[in-house]
Length: 113
View: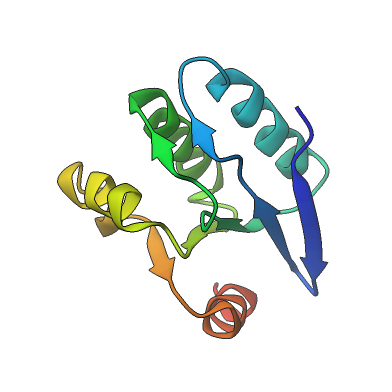
């Protein structure tokens, strides 16, 4: 799977697909891990277009968080109401920063330790 991405200084903005489920979670995870393997450690995941996510999608986020927690940072941009509710229900909102404004997100990620 190829994910659309754009570089903003030290941050990579990655557009995620409309759904992240058991059917494509492995492909999404592999694509994200390849980005990290290429030396990028600050990822902003654009979730504006994600309409549905199941537990496999949540697993992708947790895996990426675990991989970057000591050597980088991952944050979420514009999760939909339904996805945000799922993140809050599972308390992933407590470990993953969520932003509605891309400028604030990029600024925070660029200056994160």
